[in-house]
Image (cartoon, rainbow, N blue to C red; front, side, top):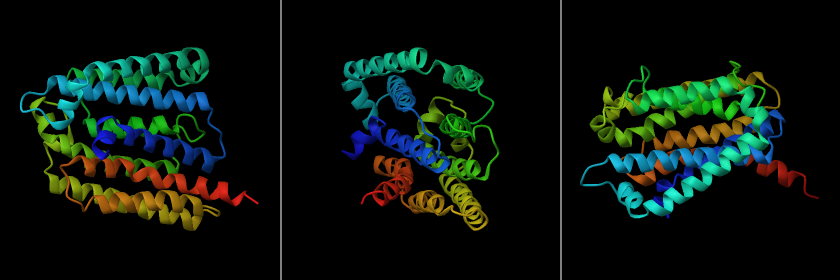
Length: 266
């Protein structure tokens, strides 16, 4: 079940839902169900396409994920097409105003995506993924493009997470000449940099908690998220459980909403 969760990128979907839910609750800004569905369907389709493309580029001996995608190619392609149509329908007919307002972000994302595919990106893949994921999560909220402390705290965790998880693919990226930091840093350096990012982020989080009143829910959600990934950084990598554990480090961001819900019960 753990491998299936990783193969189908379900862990990424759970994490994305936790991110959107947390910041919607913290900022008191409701995110529409249609926009949430647009996010989930778009990201899922993107990850399925990426994994399927990776599987088609692999050479024998195939990785376990590649064998899974090649074996169930028709089913996965059908799921991708369904998700793509759902995402396009919601985007054009239900959330067109949101997409129009965020058009520069979307175009820049597509531009760098093409550069990565044709191997012409001037920026390492890990930095681009972390930057666009952070901007994407904050796009529905008022903190979008604001250099707010909470944005930096979240970004530092995302960057550390991406470094740890992408390190699993260093050999594949080297073979396909993808511009990544893992091509220049060894696994020990990757983990050390990730821990430094987490340490700096934790200092910012504690400072934010001290200086900002009523920020206990931020400390609870993001603090446990940082702790989770920090523990993962000391765990042996190279397997799918490790990658999923890192991706699922965002699950504690559901806790403030859960506690708030139960506090309303009589």
